Length: 237
Ligand SMILES: [Fe+2]
Image 1: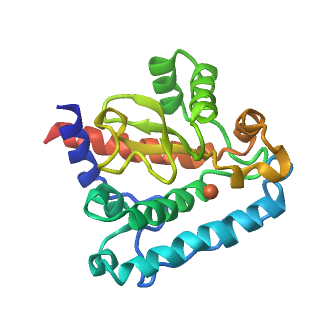
Image 2: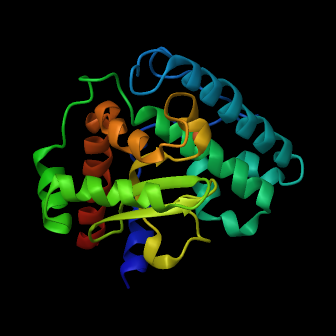
């Protein structure tokens, strides 16, 4: 029942906090800040390689997949995730990679510039986790215990906040994810080694802990407000 509700919410959600429209081919947007802006938490070289090579490769490979799947060109990036079971592994990996990274860049800001959780978000975090610190610990644990490559997430599942992790370039919007781990992403951290290895080497836990310094809470707050407003509107239907 919850998932039916959440599905309705996703369909009702018209607010897009990063551009979900695209021309064919798919394109790589510029970072919303200079590559050195997140230092010392994330170094310039990591950002340049991560955005300019890794994310660009996902975009290039997704465009190559459009030749085999022409319907992709007519779909929003979010809708591709929601219907990912209809496509092959190349679309799952590269479509997921493009969506995840496009979101990820928006969720960060220079140290001291990202604000803090809004009163509404903080109240929900405290209701669902007990405290902000407890949520952060759960999030770090999800990222640290994800074997191999993947992502840590804070999602809104239609009723409450939830911390999850996904492998590779999967994300909580995908219809191939276990139903009790699907939801709308509010916060995401990339735990692939390419995200942190130059500065942190194999210390993924240190990266996860330092990363809070560059979280853009203003964007997380906007995403939470948009999805919970949509939930409320759906409940009134
Ligand atoms: Fe990445």
